[in-house]
Length: 391
Image (cartoon, rainbow, N blue to C red; front, side, top):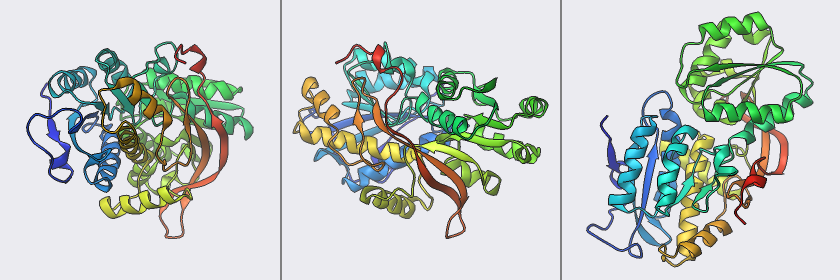
């Protein structure tokens, strides 16, 4: 396979960067590996665009130092991602890495990154392994632990009194975390259907759903998978008798834009929403729409926060990123204002934060979009932190 690399400064219209060899104190390097092609591309593109917007607002700098960000498309392939990471670490000698969407790719890349003592700031993937026994001082997640949004949906479905729920999710680590999270808070009857990762035709699954006649259906199908599933589910007439629930990343603005009105009436969970009332979020949403002519998704918000987190940490250590202990403390301190509002890092470097219920309908402008309905969890931590030996 051919690895496609581009300089983010050129691809994303950042200011000119310094050239030639430089020490870490003179320039900050970031290796950005993400899924930018295939069915999951929309997720990686949104993370990249959110990261890019923050970099533009920061003047192409991190911690007041010129920044070089190098992009690789992992093509949703762990081997391609590992090749890119190896180049970033050994040849480019990056100071940070970020961008990975899918947990199976994160689990493949993580060991090499950690062995190299390079800080990974996850703008999405939050596998349970890295929250628990395999937690690592060089891994920080600025998004969530995989189970969290599913836990929140499980609680909502439980509270609403649904008795018979069917779960549809891909057969990979993130999908298995989805089932674990949902069932941690939903105690009724469930049946699971596991699909292939990247699957786009759901005729067989829809036949199973029609035969099962559940009163609610919970699905986690990221990117193009979710887009196709919802279209086919509604077209088959199944939405008349079965209430749809999803984690926010299967019901966010990227999916809504592609599906439209068939998503109205669907419930989902998120730690962020474009209608959250804080100054940082209002600026982010307005500037993202101005820059890209679309509403941001939660993926974009996480990419944005990842860049702000790096900026704050580099500033705190006054550019001395070679001091790993000091840089770790600066990252743990989280001295930046997130678009989701306040949160903190737990001892396993995963967020402790609020999770909200959103419903899809039309806003005052007539757009089909998410509206925040209320809080599901307050200061919610993941279920694996007790297994982490870091203090």
